[in-house]
Image 1: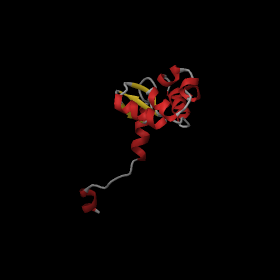
Image 2 (image 1 turned 120 degrees about the horizontal axis):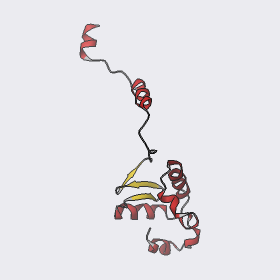
Image 3 (image 1 turned 60 degrees about the horizontal axis):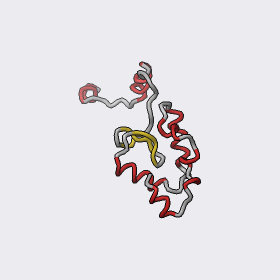
Image 4 (image 1 turned 180 degrees about the vertical axis):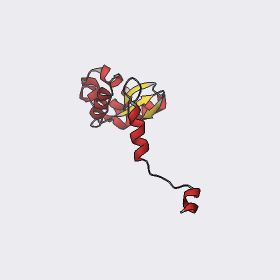
Length: 108
């Protein structure tokens, strides 16, 4: 975040959540820590400016303006380490709506 945005808004940097929390939290490996960092950002008075600056700079990673960045783009959430469970894909596939094929429609 640009310090000028904080100065222009007339806000004391000590009041910013990112200044009072552990900086490592905003670059955490744990998905739960990343979600905590995103939640802390929600009440920040310069959140919009922080997010705009991160988008402009294409920040490589971390939580900026309440959003998670990876390779310069915002992603919805951080996946846990390791491979996804095999049954997660099966559950998603079974929950997907079934679209009838043309052959099934003509046969009926």
